[in-house]
Image (cartoon, rainbow, N blue to C red; front, top):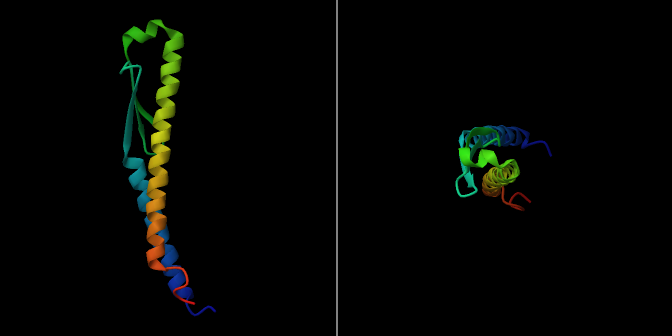
Length: 106
């Protein structure tokens, strides 16, 4: 039962290394969105942190529109980050099947 324990530990170490690489890769990406025809431009990193924000002077005069456009831009950027994280995780999980296909060792 425990004869493959060393292999299991190596596999777990490899998974941890891959997860760390994936996290670093995600964090290094930048996602940019525009809202209101470009009146709001927002950039976030792969962790979802806002790293740049540009607001057209014209929209500053309309607080309600500014709030709506900011909320839309933030939500769109967050969706992009989440989709990228999901796609990257699915890619990593897809690679696990190649390491140990179901039923191969039975």
